Amino acid sequence: MVAYLTKAKDLLSHFELYELLQIPRVENSYTDALSKLASRDFDLMKAIPVEKQSRPSIDESLAPTAMTISESLRSRKEIIVYLNNQVLSSDRQKAQKLHRRVAKFVL
Image 1 (cartoon, rainbow, N blue to C red):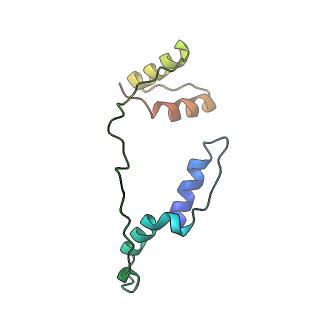
Image 2: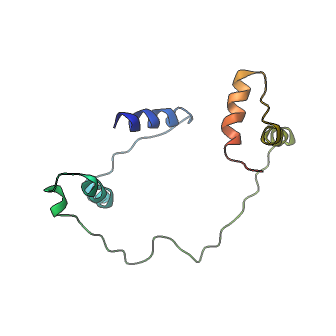
Image 3: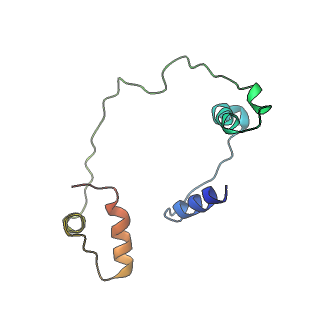
């Protein structure tokens, strides 16, 4: 649990704004059942609720869409140069920012 909390705090530090919501147990029965399955306590494994869905959770009729995002040529060039040559800026903050952004791209 400590490792999960550490990882969550690390990921949350990258966001400007976020909100934590507690999901009522009634609405989270699937996750609760999974946690019981992972438990070694056999008393917990006796009653696992099963939820039946009336329709698929993923609508396959929706075609994947591509969105165009306007971005400056300079920032794209920095990403391409880094992916090709693995060279970061000498400015530490710019280098860290670029390193985080580059994780989303592949050449």
